[in-house]
Length: 59
Ligand code: SF4
Image 1: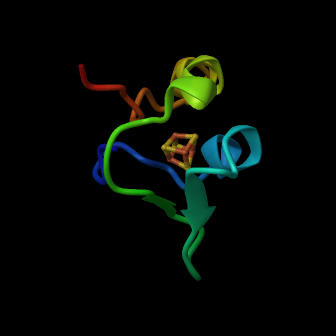
Image 2 (image 1 turned 45 degrees about the vertical axis):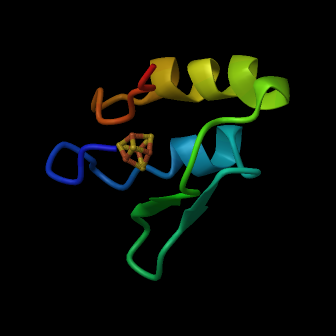
């Protein structure tokens, strides 16, 4: 997650609540570590939906 680019829309937490929660200011806190395979599709969807292009998956 790019903390500079993030605009605290909260969309990522809506789309991937298993791995993303919002802090008290509405900025996402992403669970550390690798995305579980069972959530890969949802993670890609959340990254693609970020309107600020601030959420990216790493290989
Ligand atoms: S969807 Fe993008 S801009 Fe919105 S809170 Fe998540 S990372 Fe930030």
